[in-house]
Length: 392
Image 1 (spheres, rainbow, N blue to C red):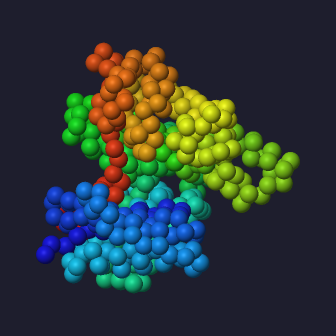
Image 2: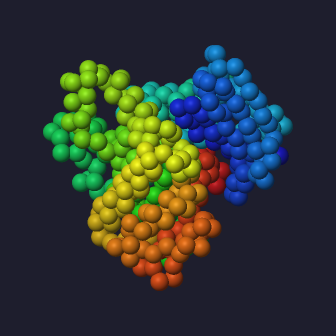
Image 3: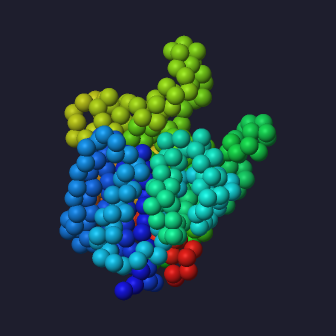
């Protein structure tokens, strides 16, 4: 029996995982996730055809990311029925300036990544928890870290710096950008579905609970909306996006908010949730008759359209707009509004194509090609992991 590649993608309250064949085809074997960690932990596993393979629940007390990882290991062993795991690949949000490509994990790498936790406080510790748990439970298994920042490390220097004294830039205060694994997968996939477009001037819109845009030229990141942290840029589900730093000083001076209170505000209580006062879920907001819900959706779209203009300037023009992510792939009405706001660039969506979703959604006469390309971060991680351990 051939070995497999396992992939873990840990978030703040969930861990997604997938098992792939370790051969050149890297066919998906199983995909699952543990959701609602800390609340009502729930595991589901599906086969490639969408059939439910496993479903389990646990009480919230004492069930953290370490416990979730242990359950994933146990479940994976049952599903693999004796087949070996060649390696485990992990999504790690922050690689800093040191890590610009996937790397085999050892104690030194774990220590270095822990030092980056202040740069991604709500992501990095959760990314590292499964790595530590697997290192303890199965120390002989090779683990590989794949970084969300890596895709952007080749940006021009001016796209990465803030106008701060150089001592802070030298200390690591710079624009890093995120969602890199998604952008890398989409640009790779574009070479298969639209090869004539792949090396042109593109903006990829990763729109979901976390949202960002990336300007891509010749398959390389040129600029992106997220910066030092994953809270910058667009309006998101619960994150505010770009904000005048003077607002934060005001909130400290007038409302007595400290760093932790500000962190909670801009990461967890703002964005679509904060503006609507209702929900962070785009589907819920679109179904609501509340004017505040409509305003939240309108602000989400307005900021995207503005940033498309900014990134088009960074590219010197625009040849293609690619939608991905949960909202980008499934919210046709949101895509339609973004398309309407970008007509000045020569973009014209085809209503019927946009309603169908995946594939080309622009009209034949459009001066800018628009596509919906579903992302697959886990497959991208599997490919990187296989390459690091020499399985492809």
